[in-house]
Image 1 (cartoon, helix red, strand yellow):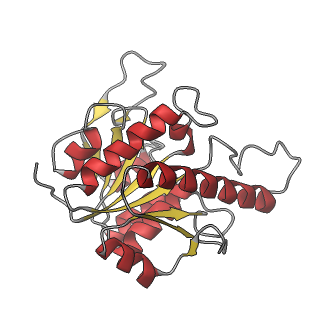
Image 2 (cartoon, rainbow, N blue to C red):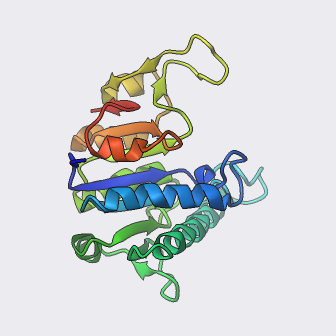
Length: 236
């Protein structure tokens, strides 16, 4: 297979690491995700990854008024660090050099995020996992993903989910839901399709950064997307 892209950013939700339950850690699922990353890496593609923290703690929604938004978001950032270290371990057990770069300083367990350092790791064919979101409250990991993708010059953001693309309505509750093959950014915003938060979509539009939404559970779907095959939904 021949890759279409030289450098990509893979966005994973925290719930992805939790498998079907969506919480905690499903190590079989995480191993499968690691194998998908390795298959892409073996094509000499430079891979960056951003992982959410929703399988552990979702800052914006998990506090029920008990914790302020800023503190909750900081807790969510730390959850993404835990997930990043978990995926790093799975990749390195399989011989793939990996670096976790954190937006908040955690020098004992991760390197600080510095763009030039990230570029150097990617050039050396190390998988780079960007942890702790943007380092700021009120911003989602979707926004962190598109920001890091733009900073390091990724050619596409691949959002791996549990649905095989973007639908006009929830396919889990509507049997007549229709999947879009292609969309533009304004369609996503105007139709409120909930692909990513509005800030992330607008950022991609302004920076002409395409997004591919796909089901990571389908056979070789991430690899196929990297090689330019039509899978999921392409937003550009």
